Image 1 (cartoon, helix red, strand yellow):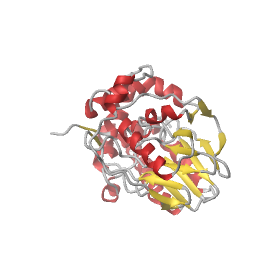
Image 2 (image 1 turned 90 degrees about the vertical axis):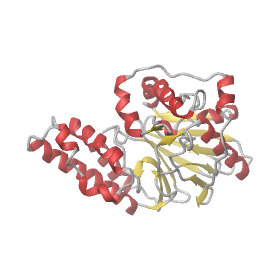
Image 3 (image 1 turned 45 degrees about the horizontal axis):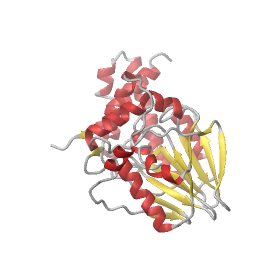
Length: 320
């Protein structure tokens, strides 16, 4: 039986472990780069913006944690990576795809938040000497979770195959423009939402919002931050002047802001029905079995994550 590690298990485990961020040795990096061949294809969703769609699965040894949408943006002078992938092998394939598209230097690697499927490919870019970029709260999140995430990921992928924990040095406290030469990406550090360290990037040149996990499409969202905060940040993002968005999970590109409607509906349903459960005296277990069930047929992996989301929402809302 293939070992499978769900995001739900990741999120449930975060509160129990507080470990310092670690690194892999050179020999471990070499071993982790050895991987069965996988098809790695990207779509150019707008001029110079290339996205690899992640698979709608939880991590397995077969998929190398290539479950998130990742990609890169090419400017006149340099390249920025938006999420380097979920494992060293995933990041290595992304880097190879960049090198097929351009020989420009990879100047920035943006880590949109702390979750494993978005960060563990970062080690594949270390030799390029880029600036690793993250939310101002990401280093602390990695200190608390990084080694735990890596250990759990290696249980599925094999020892040394997860990739190193790379801590960003260029931190975004509010807004930060990064210049690729004739193309500026506007980075925004968001409040507590999907996680406690979400970054988004806006390319005004093409009207493209790189939303990462602030936007889920088709695959059920996973809540690791604040339900009310996520709804607030989503409303703010809908006011951004973008024509399209790249979600963290789902199609490589979607119309914006219309594509946010299903996520907003789910989060509002989760909030409304959780409040109703609390008001009528249902405990968490009863809420998990009843809240947001009208959404079940609208999302992939619903049964894997909705219960966790209800639990998080209940704990947030019960003391309003």
